[in-house]
Length: 173
Image: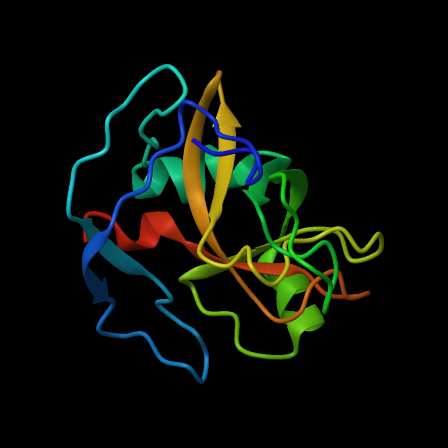
């Protein structure tokens, strides 16, 4: 995949989207069920640099293993802080899982079962504009599993956390 927007990387490939299937329960008031499927016009060619994402079973992700890890990893080409320019080189950030009660207090808005919070409420490091739709992954025994999809309000605000659609709640959709 692409790591630097300004370099011609041999693993870079572009695919056109044939169809977007938004989740039927998505709503802009709460952003619950903020997920969509993209059907590509051409299949992806996997290689040493381009590998498929591992999708976890719901129990493995939520109750037993993945959400009990200390942190997950997010990546993207979004802003480094609100209202800044987007970066040219992909940024990667480890962010701590945040328990649901702490998340509810910080956001002061409904935190549905289909989402989780992660990040740090003090250092200002967070996903930002331009990262939305990107992956939140969790490493377990050397394998990366997609645990969430980035969305949220602002970025790096003191006392706030990043909000993620909990991918395992939507499998096998």
